[in-house]
Length: 79
Image 1 (spheres, rainbow, N blue to C red):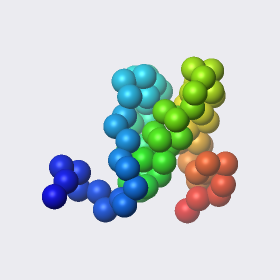
Image 2 (tube, rainbow, N blue to C red):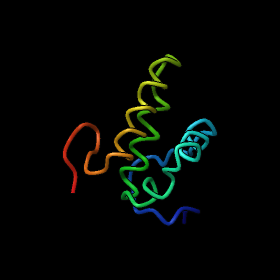
Image 3 (cartoon, rainbow, N blue to C red):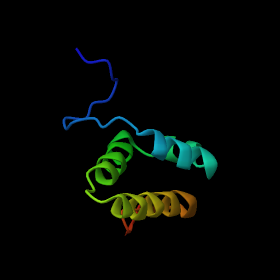
Image 4 (spheres, rainbow, N blue to C red):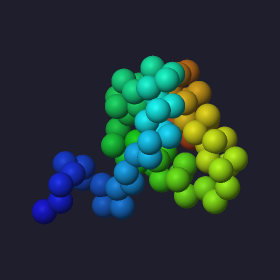
């Protein structure tokens, strides 16, 4: 049995401090938490798998912008 209540079958990525800080700074934590668990996990995995810090920042900014706009997930219409 796992510690996480998620039903995800892929690895669950822990949220890095810099992502948490950015969500809090832009007041987007509620918008992030309203997304399904697979989207939350995909965003974190996608951001943290970037090899270069510049790429991590670019991906982080995309996630924040999508959360702020709503209706978008990974540049695709959602909901």
